[in-house]
Amino acid sequence: MSASEHRLLEVLLADGDPARASGHRDPPPRMGFFTDTSVCIGCKACEVACKEWNGVPEDGLNWTGDSHDNTGGLGADTWRHVAFIEQRLPVGRHEPNFQRDGDGFRWLMASDVCKHCTHAACLDVCPTGAIFRSEFGTVVVQADVCNGCGYCIPACPYGVLDRRGTTAEAGGQDGRIFKCTLCYDRLQVGQEPACAKACPTDSIQFGVLDELRERAGHRVDQLHQTGVVEARLYGHDPGDGVGGDGAFFLLLDEPEVYGLPPDPVVTTRDLPRMWRQVALAAGGLLAIGVVSIAGAGR
Amino acid sequence: MSDAAVTRDGLAGVRPGREARIWSGPAVGPGQTSQDPRGRTETARPREAAAESYYGKPIINPPVWAEREIAGYLFTGGLAGASSILAAVADVSDRPRLARRSRLCASAAVSISFAALIKDLGRPARFINMLRVIKPTSPMSVGTWVLSAYAPLNYLASATDVAGRATGSGRTAGLGAGVLGSFVASYTGALVANTAVPAWHEGHRELPLLFASSAAAAAGGYGLIAAPRHENAPAARMAVLGAAGELAAELALERRLGPIAETLNTGVAGRRLRAARLLTLAGAASAATVARHSRFGAVLGGGALLGSSLLARLAIFAAGMQSAQDPKYTVQLQRERGH
View: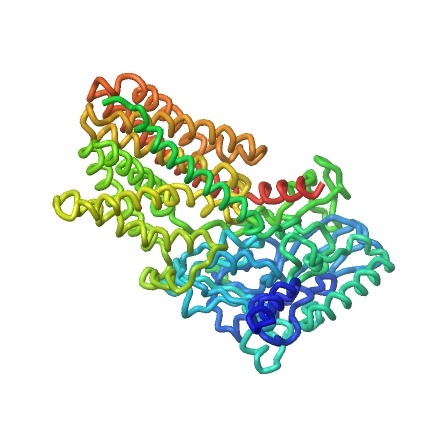
């Protein structure tokens, strides 16, 4: 087998290992986040640490009225976002976060982040190659290449990426797209990402993805045994529509309650069919052209 | 930041208060009220399956594409591509005026397209980065490369035609532009469908066909306006075929979208689509009947078809935006798929 054939085989057999599939030779193990929302206390240390380390600009000093969430959602200037959900729901014996007796009030908090998908739509559609797969299996935007075309923004099924600086508050024009890099710079020198470092309850856990998945499985079992039957993992399954997330979650309610899509699918899964339809349409158009002169009198 | 200040007379500059939004679950039945320990009363909102959201915020981040530039490009790109085809077949069938004017139309439309696409970038000066890589997984990448080959062919065909020199290579370039034009007019369907925008993605089978036939209607419409009566037969035929295809593709799209079709049938998108259909029918009727005999009828019908094509693109753009803004479309779709 020639070297190039060997290389091709290596890439083809690398399903589930995105770094290898993207052409990295002997990459380190795939790294990721496990965000256990059952122990999140909503302190937003992750949001602050992320902003400080990555130099992310202010994302608007707003009071939204949406519980304690004044950040709103992930975007160019929000790479970690803590969601606050107030519910009237009884929650078994376990008391995740804050729960009042009597009226069954509970408060869900969850720190959202880029999912670093195995099959990343943003990376697939990026026309400049600004978005790339790192050796850690993460997905990173190169700010010096991005030309702000914006294709990745609606391609992402989770609403992670956005364009920076079209508003005056954001410091004028920037025009490029930004998102979580899973602290690529810190990973390269053996440091954990800033948000995980700052999280005081270990709600955000950073590590080798396989180990995190195992740990998350134990945590769900533990919660189920203590009566929190609604605990479930989200984004952990390599068989889901995005091939599993590099950053996955333990949730206490349906994903959409947290603003997460219940069953995301990478849009490029359907792209082969789209190209076939384009070919059909283009052929049809040429046929219309031919028919429009065939036998047409003067 | 809040402008409120604590003064000797109490708080000043406080914003008008409003109810904090509290999500209420099935612990309290729909329409019932509950007393909390502090004596406030809250009315529970019904918990509807598949209609939950995080404070009504969109799940996906809606496109940042400007309507004028990008919906405009969907139209001008289509007009250019199909006009190149019309020009090529007019040239082959010896209709020089229709050929020349369609070529000029295609050249103008592709120039406007490039300008719009570059203007819509967050960093227009970095447009050239589009040509760093070729990615078949990105319709925008493939489209940019094809447009970059298509536009010069058009310019060459137009320039040689107008100058009356090197017409042989110009005609060959025109044929090439016609072939590439079929892709230019169709790939935009995949461009918008290859996103998580529900109304676009779910229509990924129909959108390339819809855009291509709408492009044929527009190019035929332009040909009816531009060409003299004795040369406009191919334009009329292309217009009728395109209009028929467009109407059929729209119906197929509506059926495919199911509940998401309401983004296409209501509001701004709905008004645009209804107007587009009326104009399509009127334009096609004119092209099929009076356009061959009456210059006035041809111009009127051609104008209707151009307008209908533009309005159809604007309608589909608006429907996509609406389906991205409201989280219920994303959630419903994925919930139904799961069950």
